[in-house]
Each structure stands twice: as structure tokens, then as C-alpha cells.
Length: 516
Image (cartoon, rainbow, N blue to C red; front, side, top):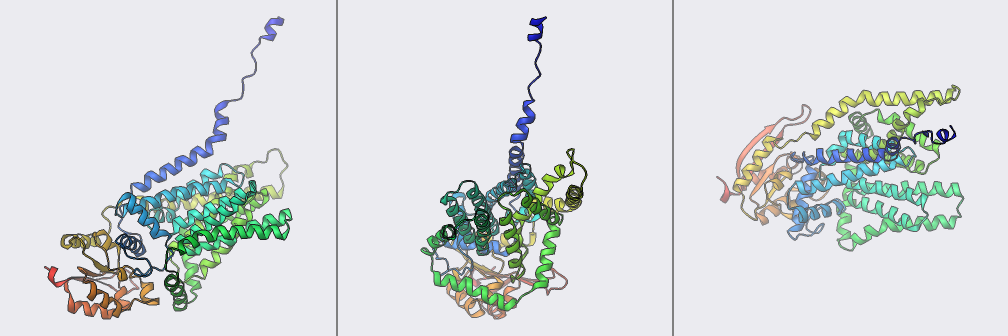
């Protein structure tokens, strides 16, 4: 009997798989979602163009590869981060629309991972895959993260800067402060409004200083390290470019645009409302709850996220002109905070043996409400996201016909001018360096007038000039009149795209010696 008692079966050890799932499940699900993004995005890069800026960036990079100098020969009212990335993409993957779009897709994957890591910093590990899923479901994300635009790389490095700042909380090494600043500096090279991340991470540093009662000398030294890290990428680039010309094209144009358009607060609020509705308005109350839970958990990052939203939102509302893609920098903090709230909803609903009290009950109801709002708005959001991820190799057939016409007429070395630059790039042509950028902002607030366009066209004699987006019609009609005298018109039509806007003139002019 004694022997039997000693050899009786022991209690089975805890189940291994549930433990492994709890430990590695969030990382695994996040990785699967990122892989899904890569598959969906890489199969849907054939759409013609997101905005005319995309074509301008591609033509600018192409002109640089041809040996022309940014700012001195090519007008460019941006810092050089994005065109540098496009040039690198062309060198690696060949000159095509898809090569730099692949680079942006990969940065989108990094954005998903970084947003997930930011949400997990709240202490709720399952917030990571929730954040990745919410990012993947956002229409604004899937559109911009497949387009050659500066918002995605800027946001990626802003997120990396935020994560580096949180790493400084755990390991107080000066290197993390330098890396935080460097992330802000690199983000600024892609999109200069990203410089606002410097006071954002500075707010987290100040909160740490107050909580731990640092001496002011230590705070000053840390702030200097942060600023030095941000300055280094900008200074390295400044050595390679014409800074006075950059100032004229970037800063002066920005000032002129602000004076021309003025403060359009009502318009900007409407843009913000449309953005929130498109990207699931239920995320906003969830983000507020998530921020409260983050503060309640006393985890690093609460002040950083508060400053991120508190500084970015007003700066966006006073920007002129404001487009929907400018709002992209709001997505990561909103998604990270909303993910915290949604991942916390089950625990908020669980009493865990505690007596029912108003506080826990209110939190539980808030969690349920946030989940309900997100789920309620999810079908419309997913429908828009799915439509944007659908492959569209034949979209904008009318524009593609123009591209085909130009390809038939083009010979190696030919150039073209167009106020919708993607037409020129897809036709395998380049533009005269001075007319690569034909944006309405340049025409309305900078140096591109009819006399400059005429002089460059007379000197360079491009194969074709295409009017497509009413920019020359609105700002330099004399150029169109001159073109009608000097070139041969092969197509002309007017298209009414929007009820409240005038029709768009669409015309193609070929050089007389190459006209049919």
C-alpha cells in the first residue's frame, strides 16, 4: 500500500501550449498581420497615381539621375529625404513607378510594427496585434503606404523616435537620446512638419525629469543630446545642398502660401471630420479611454502620446492649404491608444471578485461603448480599405490612352511638360529640370509664371506639352495661347469632374516636326 501511495500518479503539469500562446501569441498575430499587409499591398501597386505630387517626386528623382541638381536646377519645395529614397529605389529596382512604391510598402510594414510596439508599451501585450489590425484596416494607411509620398517615411521615423525615447526610460544611456533625436531629424527630412516630434519627445523627457526630480543641469544636458541628435541628419544634408536656394523654395513658398490662403479653420475642421469618418470615428473615443488607462497604469509614454496629439492637432488645424494626406501623422498615436482601450475591454468588464463599484462599472461600460462604436463603423471602413487594396492596372483609362500616344511618338532623350506629371513619367519621358514641378502651389506662390514656362520651352523644345489639370489655365493662360501658336494640337477636350468646379481643359500639343 505504501509503495502504491508513493507511486500514485502526480498532478499533470500545466498545459504548455496555452502558456506559449500567452507569451508569443501577440507577436505571432502581429507578424501575420504585417505579412498580410505585404501580400495585399505588393499585389496592388499598379494604380495610375495617388496625387499629382507623386508624379512630381518621380520626375524629380529621374532628373537627378540625369545629372541635374536639386534646388539649383530643379525647383523643389521639400527637404530632400523622399527624393533621395526614390533615387535609391531607382538604382536598386530600376526606373519604374513600382520600385519606390515597394520601398514605401516596406516602410508601411515598419510603421505597423512600430505602432504595435508603441501600443504594447502600455503594458498590455495584446494591444500590439490590435494596433496592427487597426492600422491595416485604416483607408488612409493603405492608400498612402502604397504611394510615393513623404508622410509614410516621416511617420515611420517619428514612431521609431518615440520608441527610442521609451527605451531611454528602461536603459538610461545617452545613446538612446541621440537615437531619439536622430529619428526626429530623419523624419523631418521626409516631411518638415515632423519636426514637431522634437517637443513631443521633449515633453516625455520633462515628465521624467519632474517625476525623478532631476537637477536642472542634467535636464539641460539631456535636452542638448536630444537636439544634437535631431540636428545631425539635417546638418549632414545641408553640406550637400544649396541651403539659400532651399530656403527660398521651401520657407518663402510656405510663407507665401500661408498669406495667400489664410487661416481656413472651418475648411480644416471639415477635412478633419472627413478623415475621422473615413478611418473609423470610433477610434477617437477609444483613444481617449486608452490615454486614461495609460496614465492610470503609470507607464512611460503617457505624456509623449498626450503631447503628440496635443501639438499635432492644432498645428494641422492652422495649416494652409490642408489636404487629407497631411492628416496621416495623427493615425499612429490614435491607433495605439485605441488599441490599448480595446485590448483592455475584457479586463474592464471582469469584476474578479471585487464588489461592484461606480468606478469599475463606468470603466467597463466605457470599454463596451468603445468596442461597440469601433465595430459599428468597421464595415464601412473595411469596404473603403478593400476598394483601395483592389488591384487596378487599368484605372484612369483616359489618362493611360494619353500615355500610350506619347509612347508611340517618343524617342530616346525626348522630354515633355505636363501639369499632371505622372503622365510624363509613365510615358518614359523626362521634363526640362525647370519645369519638373508644375504644381499649383508653385504657380500661385512662387516663380512659375507664363514667361518662365515659355522661355524654358523655347530653349528645350520638348516633344509634347500636355494640359490636364487646369493649373496652367488658372495661373498662366498666356502659356497655353503661346503653345497654340507654336505647337500642333492633336487632342483637345473639356471634362466636367465636379459640379461646383469649372470644366478641365485637356489638350495635347506636339512639336511640329513630330506631329502627325
